[in-house]
Length: 93
Image (cartoon, rainbow, N blue to C red; front, side, top):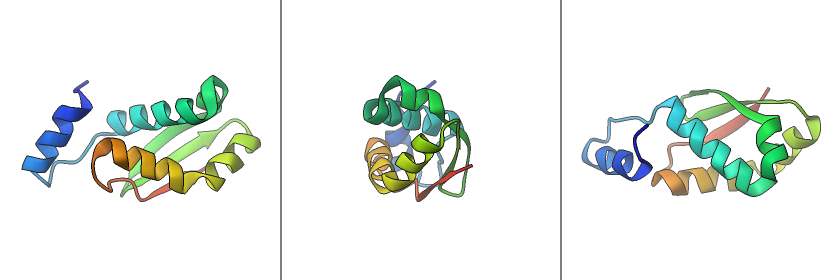
């Protein structure tokens, strides 16, 4: 997997370059672990990424609600890591 900084520099040079699912899922998992710890990362798993939306599966309704309540903050943190506004929404299944 490429380092995030390299991807961001490539994206700046070529705006049509899009980030892959694995990179988005890695960043999502990192932010979730920072916010909710290992239980949160175990219960909230990204399923797929399409059109700026991360679709997440949840094992727990408590964590699903917590994610929905704080999704704007999570989106802001992921976009801050990426360096642009790639992520627009998070949907929980």
